[in-house]
Length: 274
Figure 1 (spheres, rainbow, N blue to C red):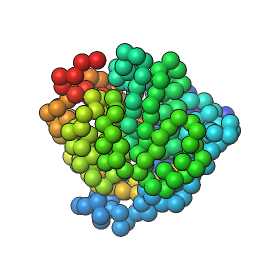
Figure 2 (figure 1 turned 90 degrees about the vertical axis):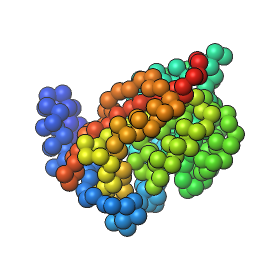
Figure 3 (figure 1 turned 60 degrees about the vertical axis):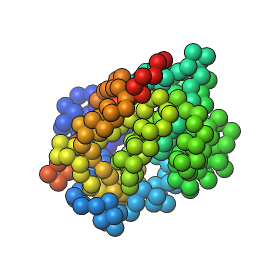
Figure 4 (figure 1 turned 120 degrees about the vertical axis):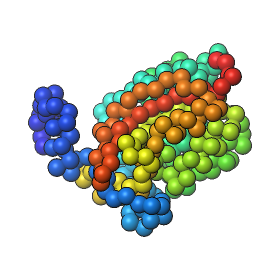
């Protein structure tokens, strides 16, 4: 599809029809299968640590560093930084009175959310730590060590410092083998704020499926959770109050007998004052 045709379709076609055409053309993520365990899904997929995925995201991040793009997300380059206003609102709520903010970004890649925050909150002094896979951390320390972000591959090590105001989980829990254990760990920590964004909420309870990347990105598959978000809210509500929620901008998921839509949530530890 030419750039002109793409712009025309984006402005004039109904969203449902546009999404259906993109699916037919292999331009969107698709989902297949239902599995009883995460291990079964892993055996049927490439895996999120697939070398091709990391190479694609790394290449897009290098394009940003070298000025050939302004921002990247999920390995896709953009000519401008797309601000995520609900997440920025949460970051603003968590900012300290001295205009500093300490963020623990779990699954933050090469810093795309940090770049959004830096652009959207230029007067705030950000202290940003990203927890990622060892290969991503190694590449980040090699190529992005001077951009003001700290990288680690150990969540336990990061939490041991006890120095964060907010934990950010953007499009990450669905790709972790033990997402509930991660949430339990954060809920029992001393971090005041938990922000969950681009989070898939299923209409059929909790589902383990396989996500297929669109051809425009890379040919890869990996396991994915789709969550019972009411259960998640009930769990977090034991220790936190929901401060803000919003609908995600990612396209809804259609799978084998299920569908899911994306959501965002901002939680504040009960009893904490800003």
